[in-house]
Length: 184
Image (cartoon, rainbow, N blue to C red; front, side, top):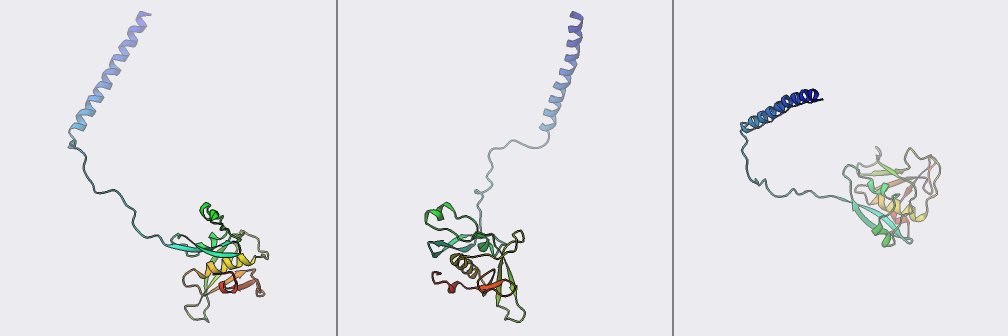
């Protein structure tokens, strides 16, 4: 057993020597790299986010009346307000007695008709492609929410909604905020 222990100690000593040499070499190599220790160096003030976030207006219901609610916009999504109508209201909005009667997800796209003036922009509000195309029964309050929210989008002069009352043969009807007596 003593012979084995002697061989083991003989192997450990060279390994320890190699590790010690490597550590010494690392200290020498970093000492000559030209980096000198310094104290705290000031690089200016704290980082601050700059810029103005825009807002969108979503019309929510309080009873049968509509209330405009301002929410932050998402740049690059000009019709976000329409898709927000089918999202549950926030806790703060709920405490104010607000709710939405739009129960289906909505998508919107801008259509310009060549025969109309250039500033005449029609916002087409539809169900997403993932929703089966069936007639929808919109409540009067939901129609008012959709119409008023769509008309609040800058540059929109007309709103066409899938399955709106008085729809044409293709299923599209025009909705106007002013057509609803409880609308703002």
